[in-house]
Image (cartoon, rainbow, N blue to C red; front, side, top):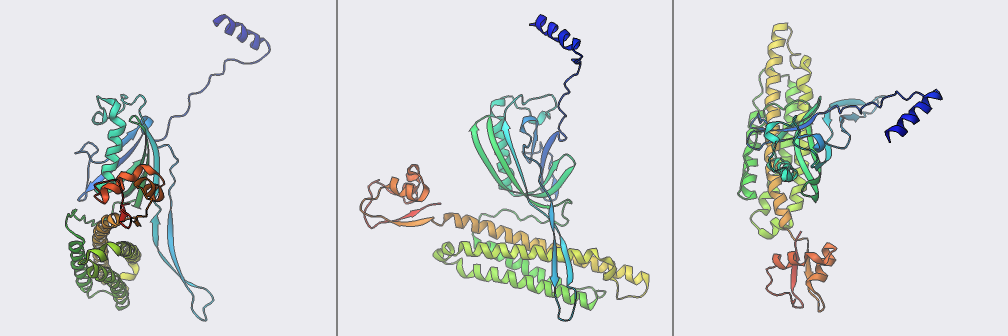
Length: 392
C-alpha cells in the first residue's frame, strides 16, 4: 500500500499537481467549559462546595448555538393636539436562554478535567451530572451562568432529560435570565413545609412592611416624584391585595382550594410580572440622577438630595424584590396543590376496564396502575357507576 501511495504521489507531481498541502486541524472551540455557580444567601458557591452548581467540558459541552438577547420595553402615549407621541423607555430585560447538549461518555476523564469532577467509576458519570442539574433546578437558587466571556445571572427554571443509556443522556436547560450583573439586595426565602395559608400570611406581612416603608419619603424628594412613586406603590399594593384576598377566601375549604388553584396561580404570576415592571420603572428613575436633586439651586444641596433620594428609591426596589420573592414562594405552594388536582373524573360504564380508561386519558393502556393506586382500588374489576379520579 505504501508503494502504491508513493507511485501515485510521483505521478501526480509529474502532472504539476502539488501533493504537499497539509490538512489543517479543525479550529479549537472558543469555549473550554460551561459553568453554573449557585448563589446562596448572596455568596457564590464554588463548584466543588457541597455539591452546588455544575461544570461541563469536553463531550459534555452544550451542542446548540447560544441564542440570547433582550427587549427594551417602550410605552407610547398619544395626546389630543400633539403631533408626536410621548415615549417612555421603561427598561431593558434579557430574554430567557435555553442550553441543549448531551451527556455522552467519551474519553471523559481528561488531564484538563478538574480533580473534583474526576470520578473513578466513569460509567455512572452521566447520571450523576443529570442528577446534579436536577438538584440545582429543585433548589431554585439564583445562579451565575458562564460560557466563555458570556456571563449572566438568572434562575434554572426548567430541566428536561432524554435517557438513551446510562452513559448517554440528552439535556435541555432553560434559564430565566435576570441580567448581566448580580442583583443587589437579594432576599432568599427559606423553603417552608407548611400550607399555603402560612405563605399567604408571610406575603401579607411583607406587603404591609413595604407599604409602611414606602411612605417614609426623605424631605429632599420632589413632590412630583413622590406622587409618582406613591402611585406605583399603591398600584402594587392593590395587585398584591387581590392575590392575598383571593387566597384567604379559599385556603380554609379543601374543595375550593383544589378547584381554584389554577386561578390563584394566574393571579400570582400576574402580580409577579407587575412588580417586576414596577421595579424596572423605579430603576429608570434612579439612573436619571439629574432629576433627583432638581428642586435645589446650589450644587452641594443638589448632590445631597440626589444621594438621599437615590438611596430611598433603591430601598424601595429591594422591597419590591422582597414581595416578588414571597409571591414566588406562594406560587410554588399552589403549583404543588395544582398537581394534586385530578386531570379528570371518569364515570365507570358497564364495559370499562382500567386499561381502556388509561388509553382514553393517557393515550396508552400502560398507565392503568396509576389510576388503580390513586383511587386506592383493591380489585381491577370495576363497578358500573363508580367515579374514578384520573391523576395528572
